Amino acid sequence: MNLENYNNIGITSIAINSVLSLSKELHLSKALLIMPLFTSKALTAHLSRKTTEIKSIEKLISEKTTLFSNFNKRYYDSLTNSINAIQLLIETNQISILEDKLVNKQSFQYKKSMGKRAEKINTASQNVSKLLNENIEKLYLNLRIEL
Image (cartoon, rainbow, N blue to C red; front, side, top):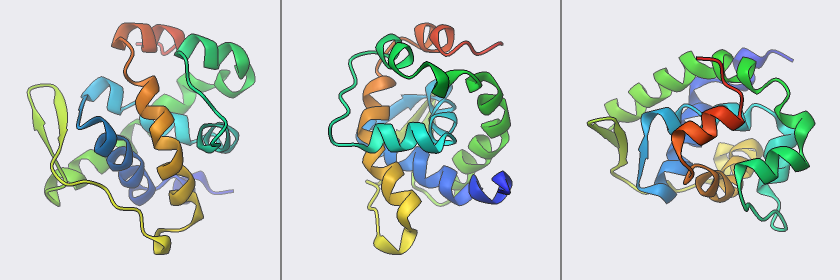
């Protein structure tokens, strides 16, 4: 599978906008964690289930360890796309940046024409938004992102 086409700027924009629409504002460092969570098909499926209840990042990682084994690589692989998607969302007046936070300007509306993957991402965004409520340092530490 060609991951460059699978994880393109459009799907990244949908993912960021979907989560930000629920959070209203999000630190840039947290926004960069959104797409790596969605680059794993299995993790996206888990997060989009109605029965999935997010308690903490530690609990999720301990329950689904194998889904996080390559998170650092996914983070760096999606970094350029995430930054480009943020720029696109700013240019299209969907979001703005105030200091170091992304601020939602328009609520995201999923449309069926966006596709099934966008639908799963939109459904999972509720759980991702809950995950991102945690402290930035705690998230980066638990996700083992090497800075």
